[in-house]
Length: 94
View 1: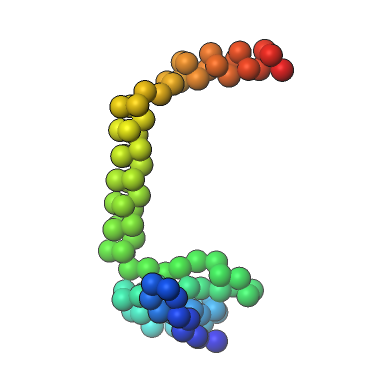
View 2: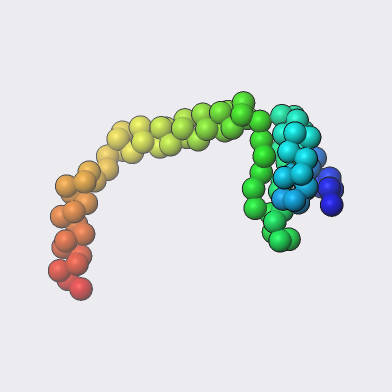
């Protein structure tokens, strides 16, 4: 059962895993333009997206974690050695 669901951001295509398996070409073409949510046994399990969108999302995530790492270094953080000393001390107290 293919259905279109209104989302806050955009319209998403939904399909069952069987439909996607039987008509993969059709759904891969759709996924180039919009996400396709795939349901298996009544649960949403995966989303098909265009490779370009995957790369874009990966770059956003990498930038986010890179910025957090830079901020941690700037603000100061406990490195691996300091963390082990802290954990051993906590473990000894338990």
